[in-house]
Amino acid sequence: RRRLSPMSSLLRIAAFAGLGGFLFGYDLGLIAGALLYMDTDEDLHLTTASSEAIVGMAKLGAVFGTFIGGALMADVGRKRAIAVTGVFFLLGPFAMAVSADAVGLALGRLVVGLGVGASAVCVPAYVAEMAPPENRGALVVTYELMLCFGMLFSGVADYALRDAGENNWRFMVAAPAVPAVAMVLGIYVLPESPRWLVVRGRLRDALRILHGVREGADVPFRAENDASTARVEAELMELWSAVEKERDAKASLNETATNFETRAAGLDRNGVTLNDTTEPDTVVFSPRSQETAVSSDEENDEDGSSGRTKKSGSIASFLAALGAVARDAAFLLDPRCEDSKPFRVAAALAFFNQATCSTSVANYAPRVLQRVGMESKDDAVLFASFVSAAKLAGVAASMFAVDRVGRKPLLVVGSFGSGVAMVFLSVAYAARSAALVVAAMCAFMFAFSASWAGVFWVIVSELFTMRWKAPAMSAATALLFATGACVDFVFLSAAETFGAGAFALIALVCLAAGVYAARAVPETKGKTLAEIQRAFRDGSFDDAATAGGGGKYVFAWFFASKKNAGRGRYVAMTSLEASDLGGPREEEEERSPPSR
Image (cartoon, rainbow, N blue to C red):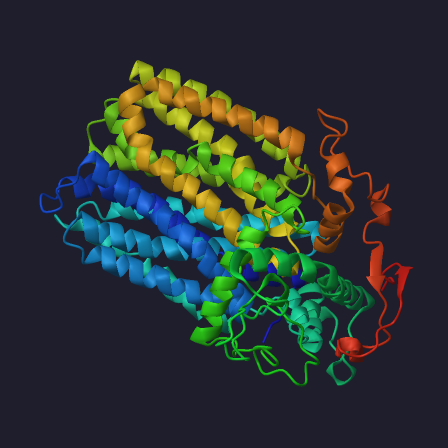
C-alpha cells in the first residue's frame, strides 16, 4: 500500500478532522435557505421572533457544547472526542427533519449546536498539536476552509432541493447526517495527538505518531529500539520537557488552587470535600489533577487511565472531567493562574469575532435580500451562495498568508477592511439596491474571512498549556458562541428597527476590533507551542504586543534570525526509558536540536 508524504498525511488529518467545520458551515448555509421555505409551511407558523430563535438556538447549544468538547478532550483524547461530537450532528438533523413546529426545530438546532461547540474546541486543538510550527497556521485554518466548503455546498444543496415538494425544507435539514457518519468513523482514521499521549506517559506511541507525520515512509521507524530521526526525537524531548515543567509548577499552583477552591467550595488540599461523612475515595477534580501523570507507559491501559479515580471513557469519568473543565474555567479569571493572560486575549478575540455579525450576515443573507426588493426566494437563495463563495475565497487567502504575513497583521487589516465593507452595506441597504447589497456582503465576508474567521482558531489553539487547554479553549469558545447567539437573536429585529444604522454600528465594532488587535494581540507565527506558552510566562509578549506600534510585530525574547529558529530549551534525556516519569531525571541544560 502506497504511503503518504508527511505533508499529505497532515493535510488528510486536517481535512478529516475538519469535518466538524464542514458540518458547522453546512448548518450555517442550510438554515439561511431553509428558513425561506419554512416560512411558507403553514403548519410551522413562523414569525420574526421564532425565526431568530431557530437560528440562535444553534449558537446557544454551542455554548454548552464547548464544555462538552473540553471534557471529552481531557478524558478520552482528541481523536475520540472528535468522533463523539459527530453523534450530535447525526441526532440534530434527524430531530429537525421530523419536527412539527418551531419548538421542535429549535430543539434540533440546539442539539446541532452541541456538536458545533464541541468540534470547535476539539478540532483546532487537535490539528495544532499535530502540525509542525512552520505549517501550523495554514493547517489549523483548514477547519475554517472546511466550514466554507460546508456553507457553499449547503447553498447549492438548498437550491437543488427547492423543487422537492412542499416539505422540501425537511430534506434540506436532514442532509448533514450523511457527512456526520464519516465524522464518527474518523476514530478509525485519525492518529492520537502526541501531546496528549505525552501527558498520559505514552512516549513510545507519541514517538511513533510524530515520526509518521514528520518523516512519513521516506525514513523507516526503528521500532525495535524506539529510534527515529534526530529532529523527531528532539521534538519529543521538547514536548516531554514542557509537560514536566507544568508538573514541576504544580507545587506552587497547589496552594493557590487549594485556597481558591476552599473559598469557593470548602475543599481540602487534596481536593476532597471537607465533610465528616465523605468517603475517603470521593475525590473532587481540581485544576491540579485534571491531567495527572502516570508512572510509565507499560502500566497504562489503552486510555492512559492508570492511577486515576475513575476509568477514562466511562460516564463517571466524563462527568467528572466536565465538572473539572467548568470549575477550572472560573479559575482562569484569577490573575494568579499561569494562563490568565492568554485567556484574556482569547476571550477578547472571541467577543470581537462574533460581535462583527459575520455569521448573522451569512445566516440571514436571503432574508436581507428579500427586504431590499429581491422577491424570488430561489434567487435570494442563489445570490446568498455568493456570500459563501466570498467566505471561501477569503479563508483560502488566509490559509496562504497566515504563516507568511503573520496572525496580527491579518487581524488588523481585516478589521478595518470589514469596517469599510459594512459602511458600504449600510449605504446599499438604505438605497434598497439588491445588487449593491450582495456586493457589500461579499466584500465584508471576504475581508472578515481572510482575517478573523481562520486566525481566531489558529491563535486560540496556540496559547494555552496542556494543563489549561481544555477549560481555556472551552471557555473562550463558549464566549464566542454566546456572543454569536445574542447577535443572531436580535439581528433581524435590529435591521427592522434601525435600518441602515444597524450596519453602521457593526462597522464601528469592526474598527474597535482592529484597534484591540493592534494594541494587545501578540504575534505567534513560526513559534513552537512550548515557545509561545513560555513567552507568556516570561512576560515577553507583554512588551512585544505594544512595541513598535504600526507594524513591528516582534518578540523581545526570540532569536534574531531564521537560522536560529528551532533552537530552544529542553530537558535532555539519555533514552526513551526516561518515559518513567516517576524516576530520576537528567539535569536541564541548554542545547539545540541536532541536525539530521
